[in-house]
Length: 193
Image 1: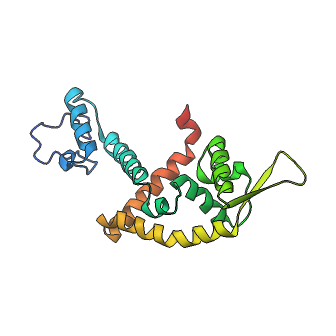
Image 2: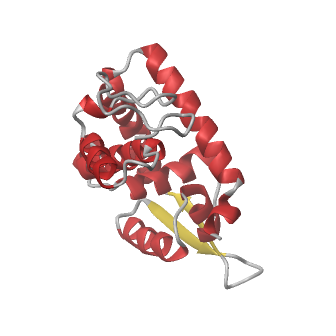
């Protein structure tokens, strides 16, 4: 372990908390066990970033594995719902490349999802009158009704998932994540290098 000043933290630290991070590796979550193992192998390294990013990744994985109960009942995956939601919230037609930007997805993934959702009658495509290479996508009435019907139920489900945190904790977490996300989005090109 390392303290925030770079010096070693005594191994007898009763709380096991990392100075400056506010995290406690004795919490008992999976990331805590991973962090303890890394500290045993490399006690000189600061595992603080792993405690945050590891937990964000683990939460995301568990939420994806749960497949969002209301969406699953509607026969939708989260990425499909995100695509339908992008068309609903923007309120107008989008090109597939715009859908990709709105949903943080690859072009190939969007093409596959659009094909599936078109076959289900939830979206429709039309060609551009000036450029045959361009397509425009919009929700059908059935797609709009599905999104509008499922959104309140999905939000109630997500509220239940977050109920372990009180309103203040949720607000603080949302603010911290917004700050982190804003920084990452602003440096996206630099991070890939």
